[in-house]
Length: 232
Image (cartoon, rainbow, N blue to C red):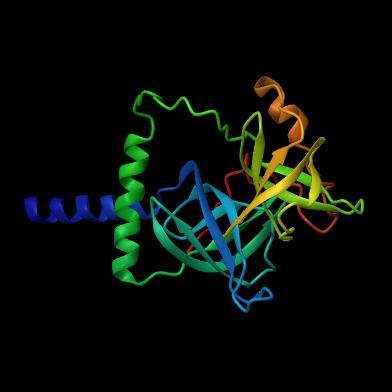
């Protein structure tokens, strides 16, 4: 009798772990592997992992993949995650996760741990001047007046790090939202802009975050507020 009860308990636990969906806000980067930059490698973009289950996840990022397009994501907490775009959202997309049995078991264990511990009170000892915006989607205004959607990685009174489909050269003037600056550094996922004038840190999100117009063909769902259910 006890053996049967143990079996039932194990099955219930396994099913519960497969159903775990954790709402997070974790920085990372992703690659749409079919796309090629001028140097021949797929460009990397910064992103924010919004929610994740053993079967799929939702990313907020500057470039939205097409349905069925392969994606590879990289996160400190989960490592390399692969899958395909399932659904396009405003400012991001939902994707499947493709993993073998061992990878799936490890992911389920990690999600189970996160689900149990993410509400723990952890003191915030960071006092960095760089700020991660609540809403990361904004717009670049290039020197020729062209507008380009972008993803704000972090920001400070003196500058901002962004990710976008464009890679402007160092020294190029542009505006992020309503703040004018110049590109001072490039890195794998994007580039850094130094402001012409220092900004009030309390007003950064107000002046920097200017979301692009919502395309008609993209659903109104905002990946930063929606939990997308992805079944296996």
